Image (tube, rainbow, N blue to C red; front, side, top):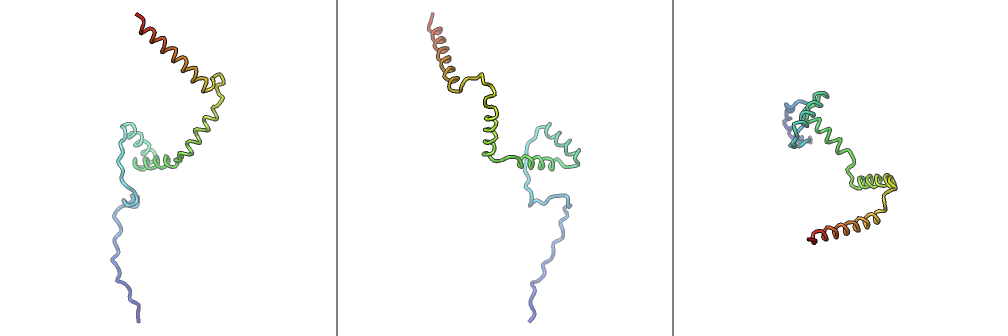
Length: 120
């Protein structure tokens, strides 16, 4: 007995969209608002590189997203900056001493202002 083949489906003709275009199922259209200056700078950069403005924007977004995205990494970076800056100005008082002095001076100033306000 001969195996039955399923009927052949009619092959769809190739899309008339040029190969340089992207297919809509790969990308989603997104609208953004740009200032006039941003639009002009993108257009200049696109023209110089022989790209479309959309391609320049997609590349910029990709470069941004390739950067550090982890909040923990950003916290580590900021803490390291604090450690690196620690002791850079030894003339500053300890934090607690500074706050105590600021509160004392603030209370003194408040008392002086109230005394002036009450005096005739």
